[in-house]
Length: 139
Image 1 (cartoon, rainbow, N blue to C red):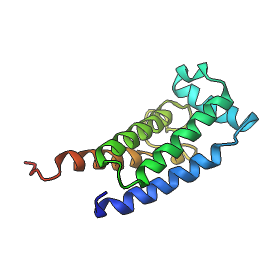
Image 2: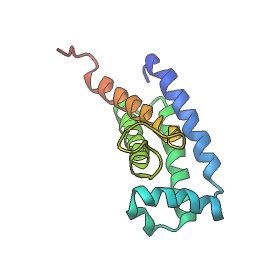
Image 3: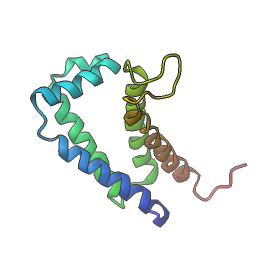
Image 4: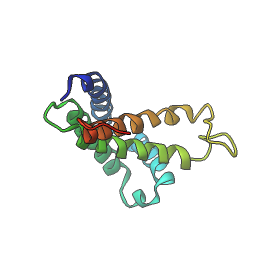
């Protein structure tokens, strides 16, 4: 891991680890709420039962957090994972009713929490591009 990546990878990795660990035991109404929101944006997730979805999300967040912190995982690889996860959250923001102002991409008060996840896509793409262009001059 490049020392310049350390603050980005450790801070985002710790965030994902904490989030994933917090979802390990989600059941009942909490799992149903999380699952319902995800299904509204990505209907194919309706094939999973809510508790199973919550477990899979938890494991995914834990794995991504660990990969971000692990120094031996290459930046482009962990960047792809972060970009994909962030893109899913952005899709959730764009497709969930009430998250955006009518006819706009601007978030409502309820959508601000999801709209901010666009930074995950930016951080992921930064790791991918920096890793792929390392040692090359662009332009």
